[in-house]
Structure formats: structure tokens, C-alpha cells
Image 1: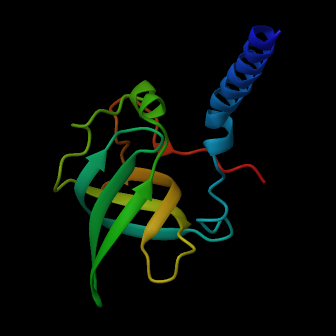
Image 2: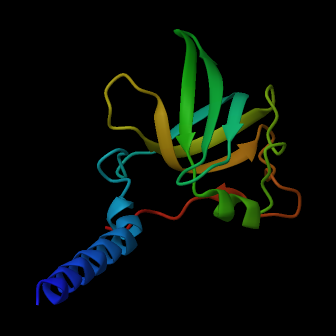
Image 3: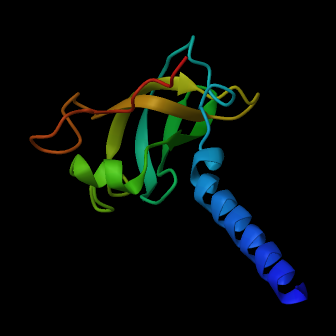
Length: 141
């Protein structure tokens, strides 16, 4: 009787654990709304310093020179898979490449983050030859 009870408790714990682990990716995903202001758009232009293609989000860093000095921007991009499907690789934007960006600014005061950005080369041409201009989907409302 005791062994049957232990077996049932063990099975219940195993099922509960499996449910929690399978739900983790759905729980972990978040909207960009708390972090970025969807009611505003900002423009910036500067030289790429780093492109990180990784999960769950990739990031593009670039420096903009303004009359007030240098601004270090961080653009939150999509997943590695979504970028590679559109033709991006870690060599797509090498450091020093000048880009133009238009996106939703970070809500964090004093930061220079951006998401849901339209990114082109300085002359307005697409980043990936024959590809579309990188533009993330707007977050759900």
C-alpha cells in the first residue's frame, strides 16, 4: 500500500513538473510595450559597433554623433531564426557601417534603446541585398 502511494505521488510530481517546464517558454515571452513607447518614433544615424544575433532577442549597437556628443544606441531585434530567414548573418553589418534607424524609443529615462525599428544603410537601401528592409512587427495591443 505504501509503495502504491509513493508511486502515485511520484507520478503526480512528474506530471506537474512536465507541465511547468512545457509552459515556461510561453510564460517567459513578453510584450515590448512596458519597455518601449509605441506612441513615439525616433530617427538616428550612426556607425555600427556590434551586432549580436542570439535568442531570445538579437541586438544591434551603433554610435550616433550629435551636437551634444556621442549617443550609444541599442536596438532590440527579433530572434536569431527570424533574422537569418531574412538573410542576416553576423557579417551583415560590420563595425563602422553607417545605418539609418527609425523606431520606438525606450521608456527608461536616460537610455538610448529602440525596438520595432526600420533599419537601412545610410543611403536608404536595404541591409540585405534583394531582401526587405528590416522592420519588426508592431507589438500586439
